[in-house]
Amino acid sequence: MNDPKRASDTPYAVEVEAGKSYFWCACGESKSQPLCDGSHKGTDFMPVKYQATESKKVFFCGCKKTAAQPLCDGSHK
Image (cartoon, rainbow, N blue to C red; front, top):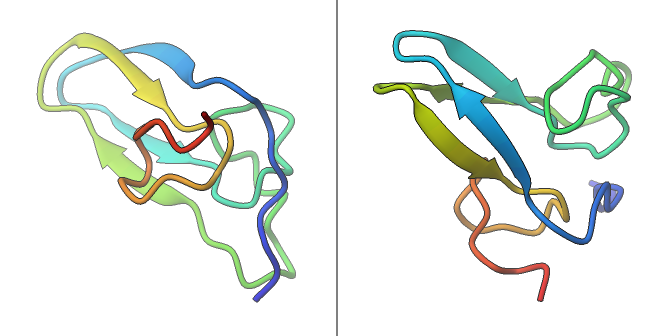
């Protein structure tokens, strides 16, 4: 499998809504970062589902190197 494209050097702050599902772009090619727009089609990458259990701000990984997919773990530093 190829390495994902680094989409950002910092995480993406997103206000999520309780009960909604979000699909994080794992390939780095989405034009709708940090969320998937289907750009992974034809690759080995698949988006990662994030289920919001409460309404709050979360930080989705932008560098695509996090071990805590889809959330930032500081790997971009």
